[in-house]
Image 1 (cartoon, rainbow, N blue to C red):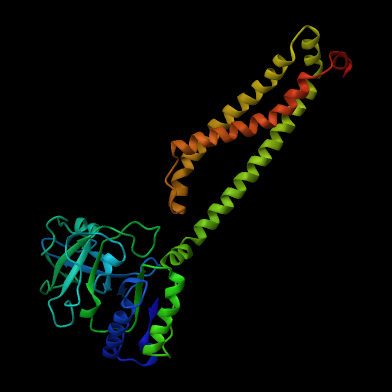
Image 2: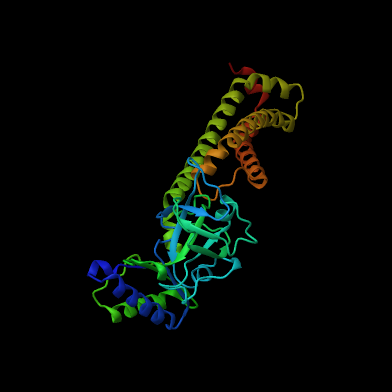
Length: 346
């Protein structure tokens, strides 16, 4: 959830006192495992960016020296489940007036020529102009999604929001050790106890925020699946019609075959072989198109990772089942043609 005391007339120093008190009270609530905070809400589509200078990285005009960044509270990465690979997280001691520190992710280290195993202790600063590298990298964390679950992981560095000069609003994250429905009312009560006039914005589970981000993708997926089922149904009806028409046109031929001693099974197989040929041709064309379009689907829909073997085999089995079912009735009708009636037909 988000709090914006500045909208209620709080000064930055007053906001900081409020945030510290709120974080302490939230951490003491029953059912709460951890509490942390950040200036930029993660996985919400929002992001901050800044050019940076890094020790040992030779920047030249035209090079991309930009990185996403966030201002976060103590224990942010452990609370959010982001593993620490080296160094340490921010603590309560990383406050205003203390040496400036930063935590980077793996992509940041790679982009700026740092070895993730030895980057702790390197110096950096915001901006690419002249000036001292005034921040020390004290930790490296594993790559994690930043502003959007669908985007590739960008380079990200974080600094303690307690070292930030202006603090107008803050996003809080509460990791629960119990049922969230029981804790949410207590969160509202805790905020109201500090200031009953302070509104709480976007109080929700992180899963709900992700669901909102993926709502359009899921709608596209649902519509695509519905259209695929409709197309399969239309294909089955069309196949049934084509085979029925073919059997009707070949009635005299079928009658002659049966009059000459052809068994019902061989007549049925003759029609089903035609179904098999159409199935193989259509399947080959369809799989080729699916392979070609899989890259487009992967770029449009989150969680789609090309065409897997299981998907291909399942699709082939489904197509075969539909086509053979649609072709069975015409084949059965052909195998029960009365030779006398067939020979008299026009």
